[in-house]
Image 1 (cartoon, rainbow, N blue to C red):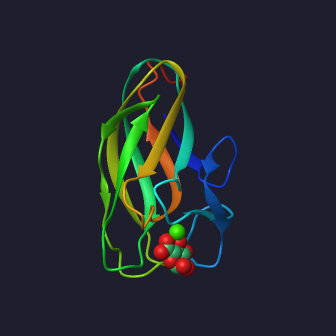
Image 2: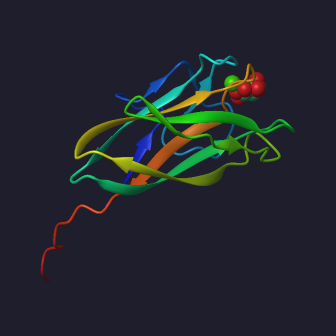
Length: 137
Ligand code: GCU
Ligand code: CA
């Protein structure tokens, strides 16, 4: 199943502000993390069964410099993605990350690793294999 988790929708956490001043976002806004290493975006991702999932993070970075982060899943850093410049704050792109999830609820957090903070984060979309058979018909 593919589920979209909007950065502005609880239980997601945005250490910063939920803004809507740049166009093109999904839902009602996006996470503008505080420009510091403390400005994170966190998602609660549910998986029916344990396994690998594709996580599409939609973001915009209107600066000319990439913004690196740690991808922290259930408290463990699993990857250090860098969110490249997208040309404008209203230009959103999707980066696909791969995460290993537990069955049930998982916390997936992007922790910026420089003082510039994260890019603006619109959502995370997780595609999990839930092991169920689609209904017939
Ligand atoms: C600008 C922009 C914000 C962005 C910020 C940043 O202020 O309007 O949306 O979050 O730059 O550099 O992070
Ligand atoms: Ca910001």
